[in-house]
Image (cartoon, rainbow, N blue to C red; front, side):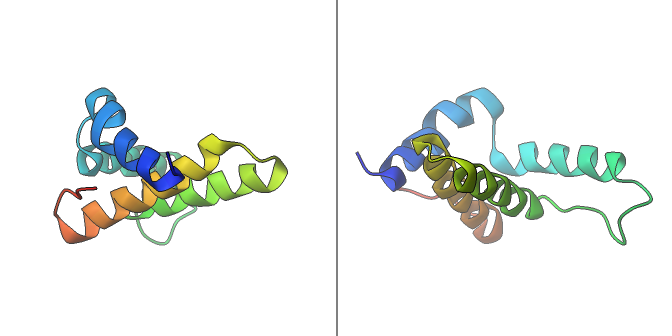
Length: 92
């Protein structure tokens, strides 16, 4: 199975069951991160920022050491970003 196929499987299956709709999950995460970074930000973090920030984290981890999970998650966060920006749940 390719990384992108695995990412769709995870995003539309396991992770959605565990964390719920990505929009609601990323909105909560954005509120928490904005609170943590209070006073350091010019504007609040938005739900759409979360997948981009997580992709950045996964790229840093991948640059240190290859791990299939990093690449699957990069694709998965891209799928979630598409979902957030289009408002339409992606299909494989």
